[in-house]
Amino acid sequence: MRVFMFAHGGSLNRGCEAIVRSTTHIIKDRINGAQVYLASGKPETDRIITELDEIYDGSDSPITKYSLGWWVSSLKVKLFQDESYALGKIKSNITKHVSNMDVCLSIGGDNYCYGEQPDIYEVDKRIKAQGKKLVLWGCSIGEEDLSKRKLEDLKLFDLILARETLTLELLKKSGLTNVKLCADSAFTMKKEELPLPEGWQEGNTVGLNFSPLVWNRNKQSRTAVRDLIQHILNTTDMTIALTPHVIQDGNNDYELLLQFFNEFTYTNRVILLPDHLNAMQYKGYIARMRFFIGARTHATIAAYSSFVPTLVLGYSIKSRGISKDIFGEEKLVLGVNDISDSSKLTAVFDEMIKEERTLIRQLKQSIPHIQKMAYQSVEYLTELAM
Image (tube, rainbow, N blue to C red; front, side):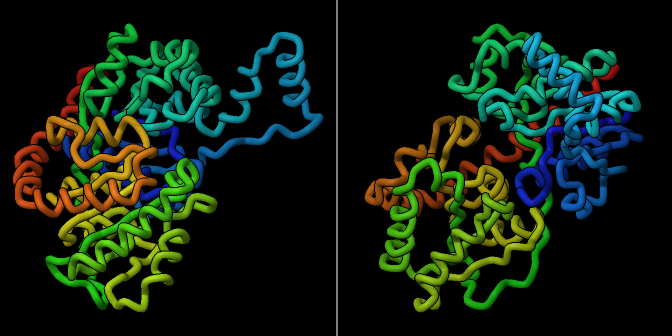
């Protein structure tokens, strides 16, 4: 089976890397002779994933002004409000590889959480026009994200794999019949342990991840997180390990966490993990933490899957749904509007400390089942391809 993954922006987002890395592994682990190919918006960032059979440049192809393609595109848009020709040209680096594949996986799990995606819709149409199997792999979609146009696109898929039950229930309620439940493949990703940095307390270090994405949605959240750091320093003897997980230009966790590090470095209890580690290496550190606080979903998945009690600074349905599937309720998840309240943030942190043993026990009970659900997605894929 030749599997083609697309809708991937590159691995400077270590969550995207974790999806590609773990998806490739579980497919090859369960499907004998499977070959896995990736179209990437930044292929140079994905060379670290050595299990892939080939990485293609899937970046957008610009339409040269005054070229034949430009004139055709302009006329179609102006006369018929038809952007399909232009989008097809722009996305040709992806679609030109489809004919050689058996199954195509749209792997941007939360791409559908950010408004309309006409370029992705066009890719989906062109894949189906070639008679290929099309799968939306490990997605999360909220009610506020659905639109008539998006639903029409979702109906094109041969299979939609929702990575948590909130998305599953919503899509089924919306009339989609091509939906099954799985879990995020990143729950199965292995870790790589590097030497611990100076100042790390084994068994007594709390990780903290914060992102520009959350900060931009709630400008007061940075102050609340700063107050949380001060609260941890005042009320515990733990070391705080500031943990970046996305290092893209304009969306760089490290730059934001560096500000906290510079402010609190005098305490000798705050350390900053480097910005060049891969997803397995970040997981290697997260797995050795006592607690974790995270805004990036796949940083929290690294913690959950390592049985580390986790406070989620959630900003979408995926954080809520994943927590619900693990604990049976939305446990220790604060919405984007809640995390500007310093007292609420510190109270939930204190709650996590008090429930440490219970949380570890629940994680040890739930995570093996979640990992089996991640592997179940490969079984669905096999059934589809038969």
